[in-house]
Length: 336
Image (cartoon, rainbow, N blue to C red; front, side, top):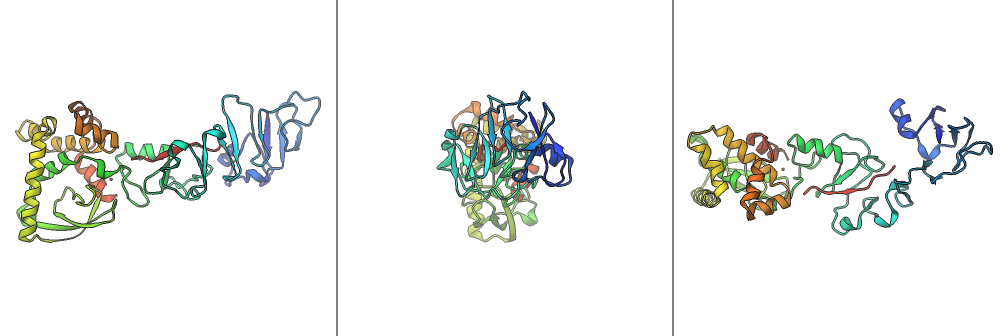
C-alpha cells in the first residue's frame, strides 16, 4: 500500500529491489525515512500505515521499523532476526540462528552443518549471500552458493566448488568401480604405460601415487577422482605389481556386477564405439554423486539402470572436471 523514498537519490520506488534494478547503486534500506501512500498519495515519515485519517490504509499485517519492510500477505510468514539484522521468511519457531554463519537455519540441519561466511558473495555470480532473496546452498567445504547458481552449475557438469575445488559430493561414498574399469581397459601408449603419477587430491588434500593415465587418477586415500597431477616418472617394479593387482581386482569386481559388466563389455565387443562406453561410464559416475545414489548402486540392479541413464555427459569431459576440482549442502530460508 506504499512506496519508499530512497534517501540516497530521493526517488520513489515500490521497493528496494526495484530501486537497485533501475539505479546504478544500491539503496540503504535502513536509512529510508519517508514513504508515499499509494492510496492517497501523501508523502510522509515511515510508519506502519498512512497518517492521513481520511485514507483507507489504516493497518498493516507485518511492519518492521528496522528493515523498513511492509507485508500484507497472510500466506508469507515473516520475522525479524535481531542477530542477523534482517527480516527472514518463515516462522521464527522453525529456525535457529547460527552465530558462526550469521544465518537462521532449520533445526534439522543446525547440528551437522559446516559454518560458512555469509558475508562473502556467491562463488559463481559474486552477488550477495547474506541478504539474498533466493535460496542458498551451504556446501560441505564451508562455502556457499545461490541455489539457482548451484543448479546451473550441476546441469553443466560442474561437480566441485568454484572457490576451493572440493567436490559437492562425498567421494568416499561414491562407487567408481565402473570408471576405474574403463581406465583399466583403455591402456596407455607404450611410452607411458608403466609410469607413476604423483597426484594431489582437491577433496582430502592428500598427496598419493596412481598409475599415470590420460583420463584421470583416483586418490587412494578418499576414492575421489577430483585430483591433479603434480609430476610423473617411470614406475618401480613394486608399483607396477601393485597397479596390476589393483587393475585385476577392479576388472573382477566389474565382472561381478551384471549391469556393471555390460557397461563395458557390451561396447568392447565391437557393437559400439569406445566413446559410447566412455559416456555410459560417465553417467554412472555422475549419478553416483549423491550418497543415496551411491548406496542404491551397491544394493540393486534397478538402481544401476537408473544411474546409467541419469546423465548424458561425455566421460572424458566428466573426468576432466574432476581433475579441475568432483553431498550437496543444506538450504537455509531467505530474507525478504
